[in-house]
Each structure stands twice: as C-alpha cells, then as structure tokens.
Length: 77
Image 1 (cartoon, rainbow, N blue to C red):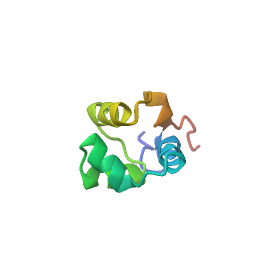
Image 2 (tube, rainbow, N blue to C red):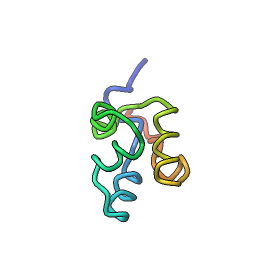
Image 3 (cartoon, rainbow, N blue to C red):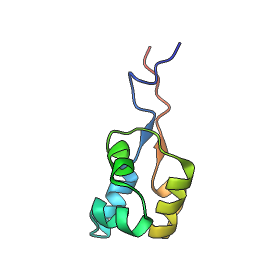
C-alpha cells in the first residue's frame, strides 16, 4: 500500500516563510546554496529532495534542518 502520491509527505512552508522574513527570493536561495532551479521546483511541488541539498540550504541560510522542512505525518484513510 503506497499512498505517497495522494498526499505530500514533505512541507517546505517553513523555508518559504524564512525566505520571506529575510526578503529573499527563491532565485537568491538557488544562487547562495548552489542548487539548481529544478531542485527549487521540486520543493515547490512538495517533493522530496536529497539530504545534501537540504544541508546546502541550511548552510547558506545559517539555520537548522527543522527550520526548512517538516514531515507531514497525516495519512489518508
């Protein structure tokens, strides 16, 4: 039983809020963290990304992993 496509597991809402608070655009994040536009797009679709990518983001923003990603534990019945 695989319901991963019916509901997103990852939420990057904290990251988007952090960017807004710092008056940064997604393009700014892409350049400072040295990540591709495709990664930003995947995150915009709430898809999973490589842990190394998340580490690059954390280093660039000087924050922790929990400041950028949450795991949605809700499961649809």
